[in-house]
Length: 223
Image (cartoon, rainbow, N blue to C red):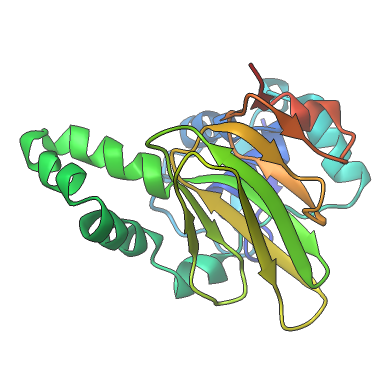
């Protein structure tokens, strides 16, 4: 069994993507470290056991290593942004019928619903002053964008095509995190100015990107 030393700012999703090439690697991390659970706060220097042979997308693992890319969602993101509170407030305010219907669900069903909205779906390592994506969502799905610069998250809804753009105060590196239960009829990353790392499968009928990495694209399922 191999061992991995946690880097600064990494969470369990980052480690899974680093070691297994997919967020699905979390299951091996949990099985290989009896003290670890989904609520454990990772910190620099922690040692995690894992099985190299259980890599889901080996080429992604190799690509990250060869390009010296440190995958980190950034604990600072979770410290300043309570994504759960943001999502619940939004649903209660703008989707009151849906919010009220949750009272008819079991506690497990309610938890599954909320987790589908505030679980990270994708991390983007952005470089520059502007990030721009074109999205057209499927009905009744939600995209929440944390731009990684301490500004309020942007919530995207509706089936019309939308330009989702953000301008930073200065050029530099930023970590963008996408949350939500979103599925897309169109997802255009050609002006994203960053490298994207899906933390699981993303569904998009049409996907456009200048990034030429087939293994990353495999996690974008097109119809």
